Length: 183
Image 1 (tube, one colour):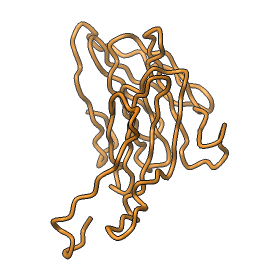
Image 2 (cartoon, one colour):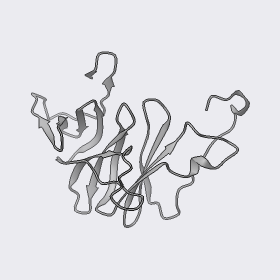
Image 3 (cartoon, rainbow, N blue to C red):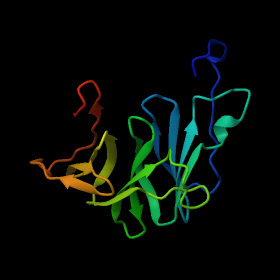
Image 4 (cartoon, rainbow, N blue to C red):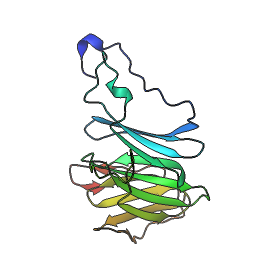
């Protein structure tokens, strides 16, 4: 928060008592949204908080702006915002250990259930995938023996087969915005 009178103040988000662990924290490109992915005994959640309206005199930060709840997945391993902050890409691990990539449109007000959103894209990922990001219509996933690019089409997500050496570990990746090319 850029407010000189509050430079030494800290803001905390209190998580529910049943939380097993926080599996991902991420901030949108414009620094206005905070994403917190948490694992519970029987579900996992992604909560999106609006940092633009933070006031140290109010408790508005403690209530999520958007909430994605899943009982299908054991945990969300990683989650990230799209560059415009309108969507979230995440890696979900189901109870059998299978990994899937999911894309959620969090700006849509057509909720699947109360306080929940249905993914607009779902695609299978190999074991070892542990990071996902996207830029425009291209998604990148990386991890142990894994680096893939995926192209988003209307209701599908297709893997782009590239000559990448998958015998190596890819622990991180990011997008360069000035030329719109991955690094």
